[in-house]
Length: 138
Image 1 (cartoon, rainbow, N blue to C red):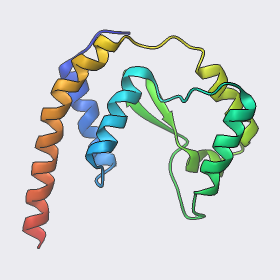
Image 2: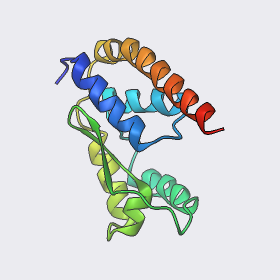
Image 3: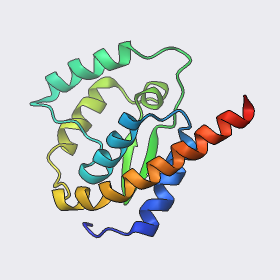
């Protein structure tokens, strides 16, 4: 689980960037952190999780759409709240899942550092390509 593969990471990062063309640098940091340490949030209990999720649900627009689960690579998936809101999952079920997920073991920090260095290079390439494409359109 802690093994790093640059070719696999490169492929998965490009797929993620293609799926999110408006991604900003902070989004890529979040992507790598979630890949390395999973996409879960840590809550002290179900009540705290439920309150936090209710706040996030309140920020969703009726037109927000997203798949329920989004693969991040390396066996990690992110649950999209817009997808959850459109599904039959209740906030209470999601809160319970968050609490249970936070108890699972995480990857080691060294795995994150190994992933971070090539991510910076790939990210710069992506934005350089996107900027060139924007200039062509203008």
